[in-house]
Image (cartoon, rainbow, N blue to C red):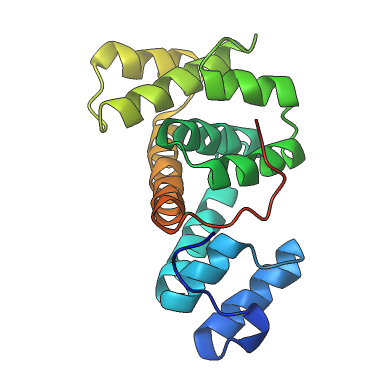
Length: 178
């Protein structure tokens, strides 16, 4: 059960109501995580949605963004974000088996994806301190320096929601993932 209060999206006013309406139009519902964030800080929700819009128009593939979010959420132990991004990963074209492999850090059979998973795990595990050979490896796999920056942005974005959902113990409103 969620530990922070959240208003029903229909009862929201002002900036929260505007954001909730946009989310509902795009996603069909206002997920519990967004309702909680928007209830207490519409500015934070707006910033988060802005970062997600930047990522959506970035040079990273949608599947890569979901891989990043799944890896970080797995490391953080955020069941809510794992469930949400497993669903989003499906929409981005990732198979259930690949998503399980990504979360476990095992080979997926795609060298570029596997390099991304290793790089993200290293970034998260070392708080961003990576050796030159680790950066060289992700570049050699085909990721540009622009994409390295965008990977860092995706990590920052999902870290925020991981933290909020871990603090809140947000009630799951996506299909649970084993």
